Image (cartoon, rainbow, N blue to C red; front, side):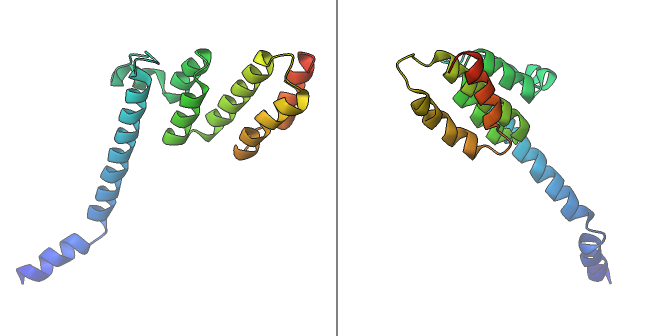
Length: 140
């Protein structure tokens, strides 16, 4: 009968479930992009992007723009939200270079290292050597 065909159609090749998963993933991505856009549109950030502009620029370029504005914390949070692990390494390195360059002369090298190390250790792929080279270049 008709009932057997209906049940078989829904359970068939899994197309219905696969479609639901695809739609759910698209919805999650859209929500994450909306959260990212809301964050960069905040008055203290002032990066007024439309969804189309965001799509044209791409998330990496938005993060680079935040780095140019020294908005390191927001850039790192966007990387986490959007799953940009390689960009998060770039954010941590940029933050570290800014921290080294802006550190007061009265701050000891050990104190500077103590400020940098936890963030480097917490970020997979972040390089202590890269920031050590930066510190050496500025006489730290």
